[in-house]
Image 1 (tube, helix red, strand yellow):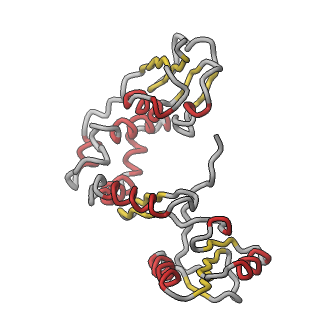
Image 2: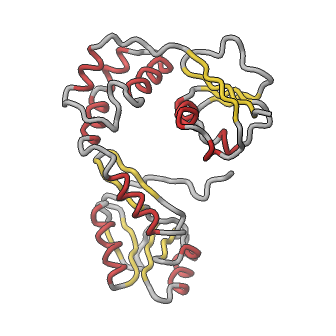
Image 3: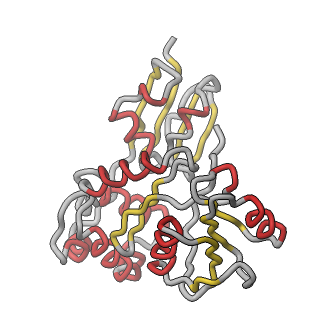
Length: 255
């Protein structure tokens, strides 16, 4: 299964963005662009991105695309080169929820639901981790060990579980702790269905956290896509006796 679009975070502070149109829809986009710090300009100006909020947008979109400008057209996903997601802001953490233009209402509903789940202080945890980057690298010089230690701390129930409330000194306390790496282990999953929605919570979490995936060739891409993008995927008849450090998952279809 291919991605309908590749999500990107674009820094717009001080950069021009074309806004074409008037009315409530255009003003809503103007507020969003101003919040991102962009410089809002008219159609004739030079810019890489444009937002069109017109009742009949086809001609304006054609002109802009003819100049190589990427266009978002309000309420017209068929005329969009990019879409604007629903946003959860826990500065510097940004969570974007998009539906490819299929339903802005669904994206908004998901945003509202997730807003209640994410701690207000999540951004402070992110800043603390950023400030501690040098100390983290010093503590775990090996990049693989460092990735495993951070992943273990941020896992559910971990020392820095992002969905839990933490004291301001949480990162310092974590670094001052034992610093032992999580044990090497492999999780065997016998799939009863090719539908990823049928994965148990435990199976889904293992796939999301695993550093490498060993799988039979009949395991469908829809399941493999639930793993981390950077996880090694190795088709094989059976997982090796020594799968490697960290968490590995062995997948097979149950007959």
